[in-house]
Length: 258
Image (tube, rainbow, N blue to C red):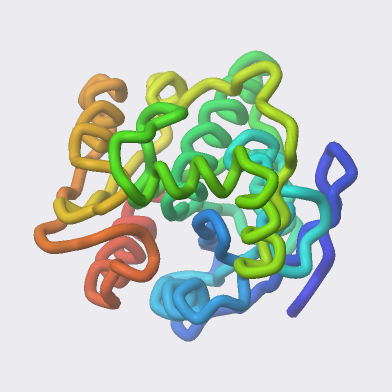
């Protein structure tokens, strides 16, 4: 099933729904891809297919990616895109909804869970965009990180006009030219607000973008609430996540969501 969703700030988001191959009925997993990905990319489809062994799966393209509207804000307003996808999963009848995010998507699922957990607590109830479990894979802990060559290339892509042109025409990613104002809460600032929602942090010890101090910072910020998997030999995000790891993530979600 394919559908165009509308975010609270008016951006159209291309989304797809798959009931899964062995669904547990009331559980859905919303997959949040990494920067320059989209719901049609082979690595995103593969991840969704493996996770679909445990649950129904919603995939979507972040703003500025694929067939979605708008321009990428590289992790800021993307929380609205994820909220729209989670709300759609609830609309489809799923009582339990978990998010699994990779790289930029990994930072977004953390910020989204913190925002909607806080909103639900403030109003003595949970919003339709709240989640029952969160998995963050290969996410940064802090913003503006330039400590690796791949991240220096990402910053060039985002901050330079010629880089944004490469993103648009070479990577099918339309990037907003404005800087963040205000700067959103970082992933490490968001993590403490997620509890008691179950949280799994997954990271490869060979990640070329974010070294292992990032997942360790996130786990420490959780106050021992989060579970941390440091995967031996794994690189970065969806492309590096083997089917066996994705299957373990799916099993963890099925056991911890709700």
